[in-house]
Image 1: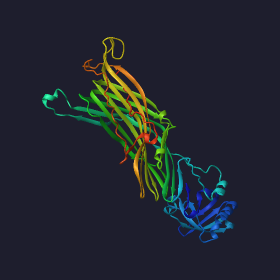
Image 2: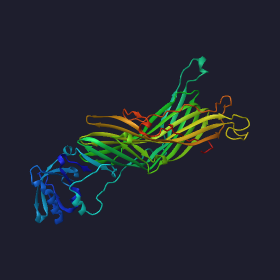
Image 3: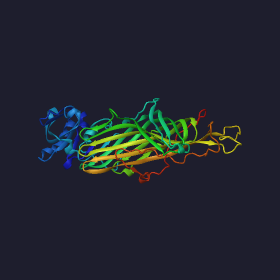
Image 4: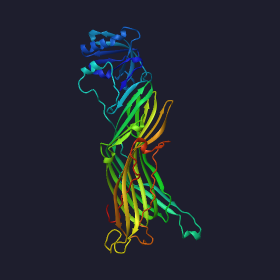
Length: 493
């Protein structure tokens, strides 16, 4: 952190030179502080550097102390130093010190948390050069903050939705159109494992936010989405959409804090969303195992959202599977599992920021259509005339989507909530034909085509967040959806 003190005050960070001292005594709240140095060189430099405040009453500097007894709960405590006295025989300096609240002095500063994010700003620290030269080793102890993102329990089944709609019709109409349908969906094996490495940069000037950048990089990230569904309808109802939060909780013992100035905490949640359009009946399990490379990274730029980005997510791997146990017509199902990491940032004297990264990983879609062979000379899926004339035509594809959600309450400044799609890419996995017996299906009652309507997945929102088109931030628009892999009984994709 680089603090730009008010009125051009020089800032000295005690922890930079504390290894050169043999004793530090803040003497409670009596306004005195003593520093005893190990060497004459260190003592002399301290006296020569700080003695300027004795030459005029208005001269002073800020000393930031991070020493036991100098601040509450071993936190950094600023002191306003107005006088320096020396005891050369004991290599001790006596400072006249007054505690200064962070809210009064932290009006302008730059703060990097985790590993520093390069910026085009020149940062200068004053009064540290000599002491830093005397220290050995690397004085930069910053590390990436790692937030665990392991949610869900492998092998545990969770009901997502079970619905049945029955419509009473006049007897004369009942045989013509039955408006009843049923739909059930279970999450058979849904979970996410891995972590997010987080870094960021914060710049405040005169108690106004100038720059806030947050970067998240998934590490050893893997997700499994295995769903089981049973559906039945003699007609094509409107597209049905469901969204369910399976897990949401704060991440304990995984935050970043500069007491009195800045704090960052995180909440992890895990959602399952599904949308389907169907006609007829089907019973199937479908799913996908997906992983992301450790080189993927998403960057949120709060002040310039259009400069936010996500790279490396197109290098993921996908392993689909499906099991089709019954089918009489056609089904299109789109589903996603979505881990979301939401960061709450409190900035003293400024306000509160919310930044969330939501990963639709995977987004999957399967279109399964019952079909009958167009010719008696061959089966549906082969040229063998003895092969099954009925079966299922299946197309599957997968997509990955990275969403950014922003919200803020910064004093009197009003920042509208917004969401952005940082990355979205679709990949066709397969197009297959599976010969299975479908009783009652004939050339006359088979359209050999899937339902044309594409299900619309539930939209990700927080609060009153509104969606922003992908093209608004320069990301190529990709055909939406995701696909589910499928496997007819006895057949493997």
